[in-house]
Image 1: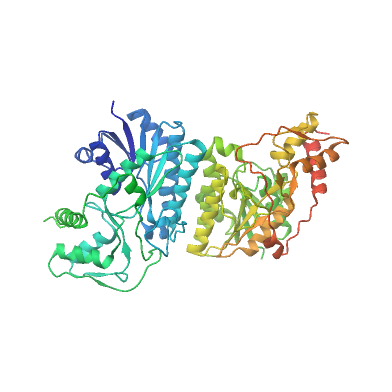
Image 2: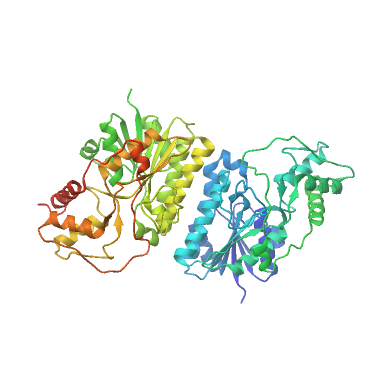
Length: 310
Length: 310
């Protein structure tokens, strides 16, 4: 019999890709979260049943009655906006911490029968002096978003330790891919289109880019590794690339001779360098499948088709 | 003009004493939280206006309209039951973490004009190898309650760091006094009355006892020290006393020759030794005013009058 997975936030950027990956692997995928998905979209993303609802314990319980008890939960719900968390910390807390509590509580009430995988964020590390960043680096977040992700992780560890809920945390680094309507590449598309290719920062900041299809595969692996000792791994490529280099590659694909320039300023909550030490996921057998240039070309193609209607 | 303080959880054990202490010092005290207080009780505890309501942002905002804007908030709301937190972690989270978020959010929206004092707990330390415990000891809670108090503290530090909310945290150790209907002394009264003076544990566990009147004074001092660097202090006497010694003193006051004995077992979430290093509050000029024997005699008198109706 097919196993059933609840994917919270399945209408979101990462959630959708996780849904499709799990469906491809043979899971029966039930999605729940904000947003509306029409039938065509649920089919595209492999979602058998979509419930447009806030991710609360009551709604998860109702979903288990309506759609069947799950074997696993991948908790992709939550905001991923650092700037927003400074303006609306209470909402960010509710979306990122309270929803995680409820996903874990749902699993606890099923006494170990439900495995849980939770995407966290490199933002839990804050401004670290050394890179690549290993998972045992002390957590020192520098934004409300980062603080809330640490709290969500603390809940995972507590539910694993006190009630043996099988959990696994993946600290995602810079995830990108078609459908991401925020952050650097979204900004880059708009600026390239407007022929004003100028960016905040120095351009020397290092980031660790991972395509969303690879991130989705990692979340699937995380389900397999979910355990009461709550393994916590970095989700990245392990390669540091400067924003200048990334935008340089982007520019070349967009049009010949498009080169970025930079304001030189820095922003609160944005650390200098984020590069993952990926020993742990490599020990799981994980290797990224989508190259950076493929991923960038795919992103630009998507943007032109959906946003510029070319 | 008199300054106004909101005391959340003002119908609770610590909240009531904090209310009376602040009223005595000349504050206009507005109480909010669970429970009903009749007029006689609000007069006894120095509470000018009592609002029976859950501690949420909306209810605090409504209270500010109804009772006037406060200069300070002392956030005494929340559960203090370790055992309960294992059985009902979600409720414990909502009571201890979400309510703290809302108290802090209320202050943030007033841009530094509202000072906040938050009682935390020695439970944030978990099982520590050394005592007395200093405030810079790594936090390693061993109960859901302890995890939630760490999260409440993390929110205090975040609101102080990101929005300069003036906050102060006091990690209370073993607080006792008339009106406390749980924990060791409550248990001791019932067992002494039933002439079965036998206790869980070995009796050798060290605790740091502080009378609730002294704890209330500390919360008042904490308001004075509230600042955007979020000072965090231990609230205890600085004296370690074994549970055997404490119950021995108790027994002597209850009736001649009443001596405790012990099962020898230990309980999840109960660490061996909890003794505060109190250098920081001594530097504030704080010295406990109520001696242990006075406090015990007062507690026994209260129990006999209210529970045994002598």
